[in-house]
Image (cartoon, rainbow, N blue to C red; front, top):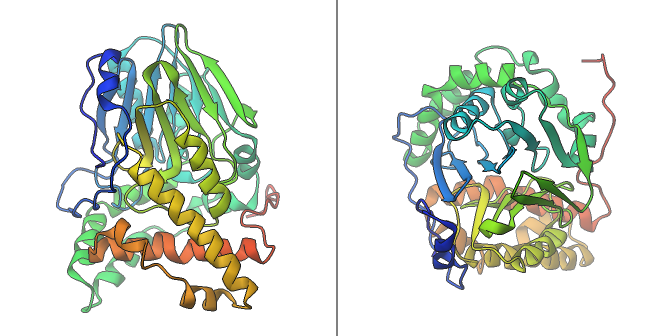
Length: 377
């Protein structure tokens, strides 16, 4: 069963949460009645000196990545400091409430903006902090892949609100989707304002396979297991706490499949499966204390790679792959039959990951790095 972890009193308790074998739990019922703004985080401490800030209801708009804070004896590391400045300001507030130590490192799990576009307040508060990523992630920052974030002023004010209102005007919109969009509409102005002031971060240090960082009495390790959700996915491993933050290599209850790498992603998760950890923090969603969901992801990603390769070999184009792909043994275990999660699974995972797998099977690149021509909008 996948459950959120309660506050741990000490490292000695970690054995009580050892990762086990279990059947995947159904996704939580969607609840979009909460009045809290979309950038508030629920903070828990799964081990001494570690804090995870999870945005409740992972499917809320805009999707917002989890932030992790690790405190050593001489410094603090932040993993995925925030997709918006308001989120990063809340991460900074949490750090100041727990320690007087400086932030020495800000690590970015991958290039998708909901994990890093807001970190400017962290860099301003701790200007000596080093921002770290995989080398591919830094390369993306200067490429056309980030052009939508490079000029947020290009989107007219009110465009997001108008888009929501247009969707809500559909009389046939299902009730669960109406509640989801209405909640976003309440915060549309704040969301637009935050997007407009977000910035592509400067990355100071890069690595390829692993990087160990000494926080004083606590060594942490950043690891790259190969292409997964992106070519530059990294995870944060805290050995003394038997803890790993997986970035968007693990997202619950609906993974994101855009321009990803199913077969090597499955292999990366097999390497995660060999880690000696008790707790897994997904890039979105509640903390996990068993392997059930990771195992489901591995099975699903491998099936996607295998089925797509076979269908392409039989001469099917992308439409044919989508038509003939067999989801019957996989999809119900992610959605539990819930119509809202079925819709998110289709839009956020099924359609994009089959396109990604088809592109790879036909020799195309899912994340082509084309340098941005600076000074040209």
